[in-house]
Amino acid sequence: MKTLLDRLNPLYSTDYSFRDIYMIATAAENAESAFEKAYNGLQGWVDCFEKASLKGMVGGGGIDAANTAADHVDAMKKAYELGKKL
Image 1 (cartoon, rainbow, N blue to C red):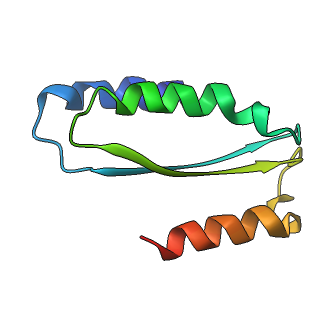
Image 2: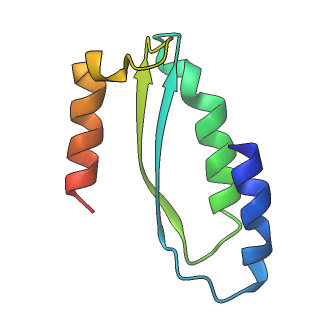
């Protein structure tokens, strides 16, 4: 995520067109606190763009190996519901 944010910083001085920001994250740990630093980091970046706002976040805990996200039905459903709102 840091690389993404670093690459997008040059947009700050442009007439950027993005407004709504959404975050989908995974972590091996199940606790909601596993996503706090990533969420706060993204929120800090979004705060620099006055026309943009962080609209939603889905965290999938307990996802600790490749190709296992589909096994976490609750996280997949949350991501689906968030996507339906777009």
